[in-house]
Length: 232
Ligand code: ADP
Ligand code: MG
Image (cartoon, rainbow, N blue to C red):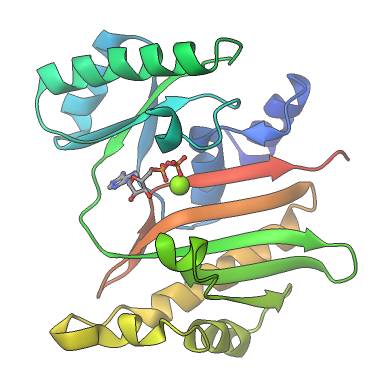
């Protein structure tokens, strides 16, 4: 499926929220590194995909109606056996059906458990005056509580990408704090620039969130993605 087909498919169903799987498909085509993620529509399929990807894996609900998956008990990390995968599959569906009885469930996404890295986020939202604006920040509580983020208006030049990374207060964490390995900041710049071009090429995308991206000393990978389409 091309990126446009993913977008058109959602629109045909009258949806403006893409699932994590659809969002990752779209971003993968824009050459943004995402964790390989597949849809399972049965317990057996979840298991065979897990075996194909290799353990440990992560299971999450695939539903356009569940935006905060972990709050709904719909993210199960670090599953190491067939038994754990089967149980996670059942538990996710049970939790979601209980909390969101109206939710349309596509199935369960199966992906590899990514190795730990420094969690960062890259987002895009549209400002009524400036149009698309890209946000960068450190993931987790640093974003939620401290709002340690930076913004630039699309289109970004490499220098903008570099500056917006360097100006967050948490930047020392990326440089290798207390003996930790420094993060591949050039690769993060690259991702920011790719997101900027992606946004320019897809004006129908209203909001985008790569939250989190795991940043490593060599590269980075987005483990969660959210895309919201505009009315147009
Ligand atoms: P949501 O943001 O909808 O609650 P996420 O997909 O972001 O759900 O998952 C919640 C957390 O689980 C992430 O912030 C990340 O720390 C962890 N996580 C998610 N997917 C993976 C993965 N493939 N590998 C490792 N950790 C993951
Ligand atoms: Mg997330």
